[in-house]
Image 1: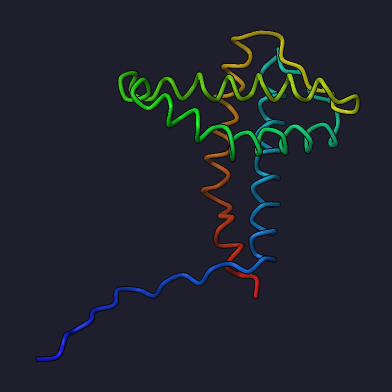
Image 2: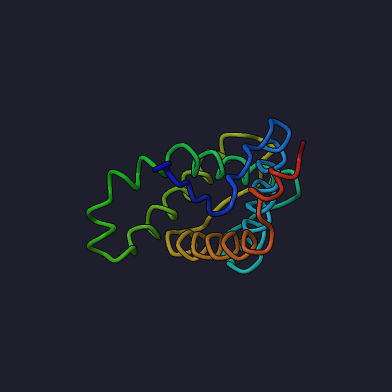
Length: 146
């Protein structure tokens, strides 16, 4: 008796290099919008200019891509025990590190006045990014490029 193969849906094609670049740019702009929203709503976060906004979004995006997975894995037991609340502190630390790194460059105008401003900013950036990616899917945009 021959084997029967049932295929549910079709596999998604891998994005091309142009598609991956487009997805990166979309994610970068979403992060920039989220940082701008946090700076507009939290009085202790100071951000001036489009160039600074884009630079801060790039720094934060790179930290989230490379450093955050290491922090999450190392803090996994604490994240489970705190029911995920430790993730807020990880996001706060990454935002504070972003502000510190941005301060090392003369052209980037981004500062955070204190811990609680960084906490509220991290929460707002996370929520804004989450909501924007529900409306704008970078992965779907990447798959549209030939």
